[in-house]
Image 1 (cartoon, rainbow, N blue to C red):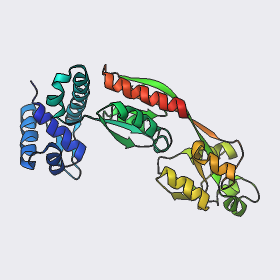
Image 2: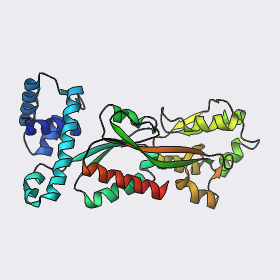
Image 3: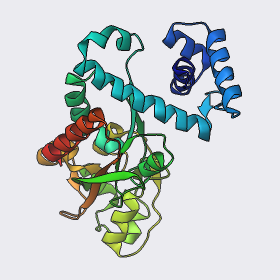
Image 4: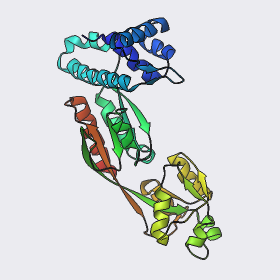
Amino acid sequence: MLDYASLAAVATVVQEGSFERAARALNVTPSAISQRVKSLEERLGRILIARGTPCTATAAGKLLCRHVERVGMLEQDLRIALPQFTRSIADKGRVTLRVAANADSLGTWFIAAIAAFSESEGALLDVAVDDQEHTIEWLRSGDVLAAVTAHKQPVQGCNSVALGRLHYRAVASPAFVAKYFSNGVTATTLATAPSLIFNRKDRLQAQWVRRACRKAVETPAHWLPSTQAFVDASIAGVGWGMNPEVLVRSHLKSGALVELIPNLSLNVPLYWQHTRLQVPMLDRLTRAVVKAAKDAL
């Protein structure tokens, strides 16, 4: 039989990033956490925690963390089915589900899914944020149970559910357009006009430029890793950027923003990929995500 106190210690160290914070979370001493982790590592003959700042799970540690997460979900559902076990299961603390989503989904519709799920669930969510083209890597590595992704093809052992399309508009302030695009939006003018890019993985601006110019163009860029900062910077005239239509619709209507090329938008298909676990809690999270996406996308 597995020692679940030791498993919980490993999972909590990974979740919290250190032995000290894990000890506080589990209301024990750091020495107790260290002993539990060391005992399990010796028993399995594997290093489970890569000590560092933060502490991370090894490949074997990730397998055990996934097991703890799944057991936690099953126990939460057991608590609902058998209320007499409420105290003993609740004493172990809430289960935390780790998922991944892109920043623009998190900044537009994904919070509604979290709210709907949390309203009736005792579980917590740990959301990893990455580009929609790269959240799939979190799922492949086993770091998350589910992910919002641009990839339709299911990862091995996962299901893929279509969510809809997130519409993006290339926008800027009227003053910015007058300054840089008075002669039109061309490869030449785009090469001098500052763009807004989320991070090194963000290819939306490059995709739009290729569609507009039928070729790649190197554009100067401000790096702004924030969905709301993209909108604010566009309005302030810092640069032009690809913004979710839902966030700029009112600004386009008021005239605070204008499209660089009217009706030349990008539509990014999104999917919810989740592990094929027969766990009711994960099914309920999936239903909340699909409904929120259906209402917004």
